[in-house]
Length: 88
Image (cartoon, rainbow, N blue to C red):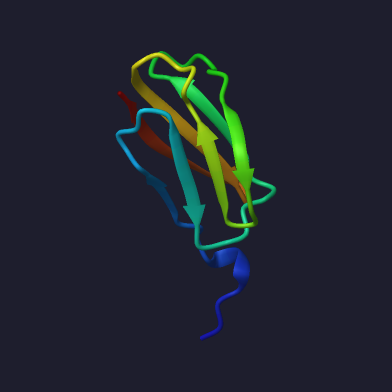
């Protein structure tokens, strides 16, 4: 049975989590065209910086964000994935 690339689901890892500043988001696929949003638990958009990027990873700097819980939303190939980030 053949599986097309569209049927393979992207997997995401985020570390270190909890973090004091920078986290690395990595994937098993090329996610260079993914849409990434950082939100507060209340749903408000939060500013962040991408300090490094490759085809399969992003280094995200949360140094300026307050301590707390955030939701990283990744939209890729019409899939919406969310990961909780704990900022110390």
